[in-house]
Length: 501
Image 1: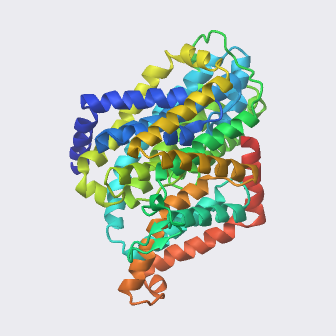
Image 2: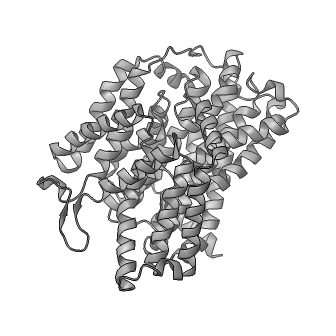
Image 3: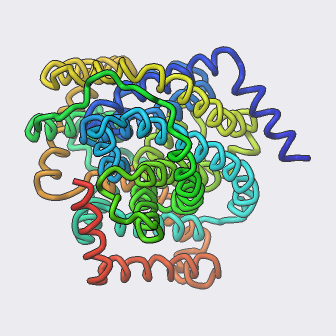
C-alpha cells in the first residue's frame, strides 16, 4: 500500500501541466540533438543543462531526465538511418538496423527500437520504484567510512567500463578529483590551487567542465573526423512491423530488458555493456545466426531494450546513494546541487514529491517518446541533411549563452574554451573524459567523507577496515582494480570499444 501511495504522489506531481510540458520539451530537445551524429546524451544534457537552472527543482530534473532518454532514443535513429551511432550504446544497433534500412525496412527497424524502448522503460521504471526505497533505507545507515569506501568502489569499477587502458582511466579519475579540490578547503577555508584568481575561490564551475569536456570537445572531434554519410533519407514507410517481426521481437525485448535493468546500475557505462551483452546473447541463442549483421530484427530490438532499461535503472544509485553511475548521472548530481538538494537517501524523506515525481515522469516520458518520435521520423531524416559545419557554430553559441546566463560571468565562458581544448587533447591522447567528470563530481564527496571519518575516529585510519560494510566495500574495490587490469578483461574491453567505433 505504501508503494501505491508513493506512486500516486509521484503521478500527481508528474502530471502537473508544467511538468508534463517540460517533460515533453525535454524529450523533444533530447531527441532533436541526440539524433545528430556524434553528439549523444552526455553532450546533449551538458549543453542543455543551463536552461533548466531557472525552473523549480522537480521541473528541472524531469526535463533533464526527458532530455537524457530522448537523446538515448535519438542515437538509435541515427544508427539505423545513416550508420553513425549518435550514442555509444547505439553502436550495436547500427549493425543490423542500418542493414534493415538498406533493404527498405527502415520503418520496421525504427518501430522495433521504439517498441523495445517503451517496454524496457516501463519495466525499468517499475524496478526503480520497487528497488529504490529499501536501498535508500539501507543507505541511511551508512556513516562517513562507508560512504568513502562506496565512492571509492564506484570510481574503481568505472575504470573497467571506460575506453582505453585501465591506467589512463585511473589517471583521468585522479585528474578529475584534482580539479574537484580547486577552491577553498571545506574545513579550514584555505585556498587551494586558485593561483590568485578570485573566480576560483568557489571552485571550478561544474557546468563549464561538463559543456567544455562533452560539448566543445566532441564537436572538435567530429569536425576532424567528419565522414561521408550514407543516409537512408527517402520516405520511411511501413512503420508497423509485420506479424513475423513482432513474433521475433518478443523474446529479445524481454531478455534485453532484464539484462539492461540489472547492468544499468554499474558505474562507468552499464548501458553500453548492456547493449553489447544483449546482442551477444541474441546472436548466441538464435536459430538464425547467419542473419545477424545482415538485417536481423532481433539485433535491433534486444540492444535497444537493454540500453533503455539500463538508462532508467542508472537512476537507482543516484537517487538512493547519491552516486552517479555514468557521466549523464554526474550531470544530474550537478543539477541536484545547483538547486540546493543533496542527492542521496535523504531525498526520499525530505523531498518525496520530487523523488516519486521524477520516477513517475519517466513512464510519462516513455509514452511521449513513442507518440512523438514515430510520427516525426520525416523531420529527423531532414535534420540529418543539415551539414555539420552549419550546425556546430549554433550549438557552441547556444552552450556559451546558456553557461554565461547562469552568473553573467565571462570567466565561465573562458572555462568552457579551456576544458573544451583539454578534452580534445585528452581524446587525441586516447583518454576518455568520462572518468574525469565522475572524479570531478565525486572527488569532493570522497574527500569530505574521508576527513569526517578520520575526525570521528581521531585520526585512526583503521576505521575503514574495522567497520564491516566499509571493509567489504574496500575489498570489492581492490578486487575490481585487479580484474580491470587482467589481460582477458583488457582484451574484452578493447573488442567492445573497437566494435563501437
